[in-house]
Length: 200
Image (tube, rainbow, N blue to C red):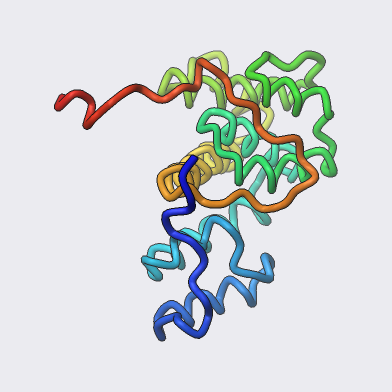
């Protein structure tokens, strides 16, 4: 993998706009300008809107932290996003996601022994990522457990972390030090060979 395409900008080199929006993040619950926002700093207003959505989805959504962290890991695996995995795998385990579940997701396997709410969240998220839709049965189960706000927030978590995954995969954002096992390479998540998709 080649080096980070959009690496850290030294604070003394920030523009006035970058400084204002970066300070919002530093003063918020994250306490620092962390990995996803390093490439996004190049578009400060986009970064500001993204971080506000992320702050809600991560810290105040209708889903509890165990479930939201599980959805983040599912998304990180779908996008082979090693930064998000390194950050969130230890948080997910701390919030009560079983180590066996985390390992299964990392390896692209169906986790065994999920709680009911985890199984429904897993099915919902996987259908959304892989089928680009959600079946009636899974939708009904999710509505029963999470309610309308919870379902919308779950869609939001999957979508928001997909956005961050796209940004960091494209930018090749450096993976921070972490206690998490690195996300393994899986053949089914390989990239397509493409000089510009063979010119379409």
